[in-house]
Amino acid sequence: MRDLAHCALASHEWAEIAQRTLYCSVRLDPVHYCPKEYELSAKRKRVSFFEHNGDPKDPTEERIKLFSRTVRENEYLATLVQILKLPYMTRQTCKADLARTVSVLPNLRYVDLPEGFFSDDPSSSTLRQELQHRCSDIRSMKYHAGAESSVTLLAHSRLWQNLEILELIGLEIEPDTLLYVLASLPTLQEVKLGEIPSLDDTIFEQNNLLPPFPPLTALHLEGTPSITASGLIAYLSRPETRELLIRLSLFTTGVLPQDLHTVLSCAPHLAHLVINEIVSRSFPLKPVPPLASRSLRTLHYEIISSTHSPNPPSDTYYTYIASSLLSGALPCLRELYAFSPSLPELLLNPLNAPFAGSEKSSRFSNASSIYSTLSQLGPKFGALSLSGPLSPLAIYTRPPETMETEWSLTALELPSERNGRRGSASATRPMSLISSERCGSPNSGSGRSKDSVLVGNGFGGYLAVPNEDGGGRGRSGSPHGRRASQGNEWMG
Image 1 (tube, rainbow, N blue to C red):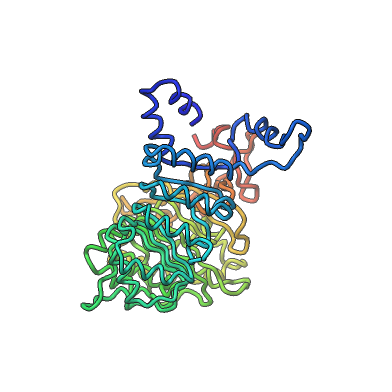
Image 2 (cartoon, rainbow, N blue to C red):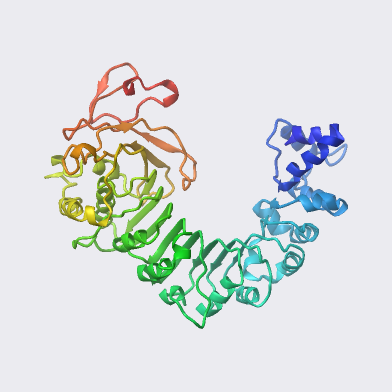
């Protein structure tokens, strides 16, 4: 960006092109992230000739004042700004400067706002008025507890007609008012609803007196125990919604993991699914069809037990997801996130003898019944007949009790079902795993993941992995191999 700014100063012909890039997305940071930062930091502390260690001014606060002066003096540059990013403390303390800035940005779409703005805090009233009257092209907005009057205003005015993302959290609002609000936004694509006690399945049902729940590409539900799988099935029964939904997130809702397969069967284009539930009972013993989808590519299957015990009930839910993977019902799945470090081992040895008679035997005691059920229900409920091998599946795992730890990544290949091998022990067990690489998980705080390499030998054990000296080590050794940058000769 600094080089582009210098190019704009060098030529009038370059200036117009460079300004469109420089001012389209503006980010004000406290540091420059360049070698000059050390020199600039020392200059800020020099408040006078005799005082070389004074209290420096806040760089971001000074920069927002300079930026506000620039866009207020140059109307052309003001029309170019579409995104304005600010640090948390700056937008909390510089509300007046932020209000003066957005008042001259007519094409602003996304802006970082203070927390009080979303709950109708009186300290943000000036900023709210400027944003409502001057910035009609806003694309994303949030309303939290206390902003009921502002939400109702959306239903009775033509405010922000280009709004695409709407977040409603902790509001005391009736379902009919919510439907009118959503119906007043014709370009809405993503909605997040959380902690609204009045919401239930009736919001998705057809009603001739109320507008329907709008078709969306992404729906996020959090803290809504009265919304069940029946409500989502009613919503997805409409062709316009069924063909459009791509992302679905369920956090502590009434949609049970054993009912998730019914939702998947009604969403043919769903590519990203998140379910986060706290369970106190084991997975039902009755026959449950596997999770089946031809479009699902990313699955967050985060099941946590409500009690800490040697045999947590959440293990039975991961047995179910493992059986769904081995049945071939999720052929396009590329990433799986789970709070079960033993899930990769379960995929390698679903019915292996080493589990019997050990501490793990009780944890996976119902695996045999689930696999046999899937073998009977698979052809009927979507266990797919694949013509070739599947692409690698990246499995991110970590213990639920240590949420701050990084994800462990294991990449494996699931078996294909060609040549009539479906149902045999060797065909349902992954025969090879691909060397893991260091790559960050979207949900990990550190942006890194641990390497994990397991190679099945087809007879219930694991292949020896050579160490850096060329020697082999068995299953009891550490599974970590050399990094990909150093080469993995044993992988060929």
